[in-house]
Image 1 (cartoon, rainbow, N blue to C red):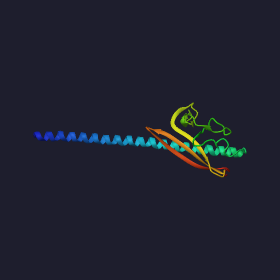
Image 2 (cartoon, helix red, strand yellow):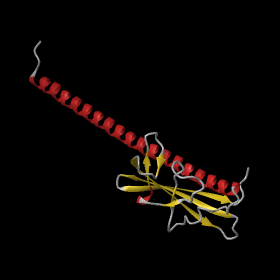
Image 3 (cartoon, rainbow, N blue to C red):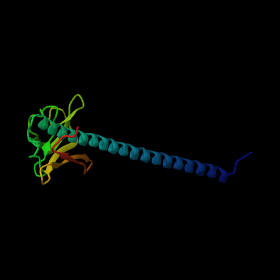
Image 4 (spheres, helix red, strand yellow):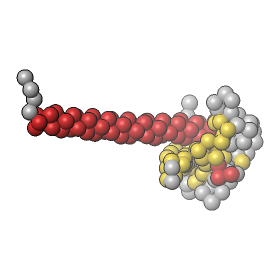
Length: 172
């Protein structure tokens, strides 16, 4: 049986449409993949930021506990960390007996070979910044601790502030 000329044209048209559909499907899958990878990166950064903020609060609580155990003023070494002059937190290289140090280099954190984050610039610079400020309430029995975690995501700076109320007496 012999094909007619117009039937061959229809087969060619069907092939072109099939290739077009395949290209469209492949493009959609690629776009979805890129979107999910970007979402995964953002979620990972948010998780790290949450842990860094929690670690910051724990360091301040440990400093208050140290002050209590050594019969020092409960805000000794941290009361100077105010919003105009926030402090950096480095429990790896600084003893609890020493006062918190002011932020340097915009409070960027560095990651050492063990995966620990620190403001000590001996490791690899990360895109995370951590600062802490203490706002004392009138009466002298409580203070607001604000740990700011900031990170760069493309052209945006994202921030996770964590607020904790610290009391002058530890609760056991």
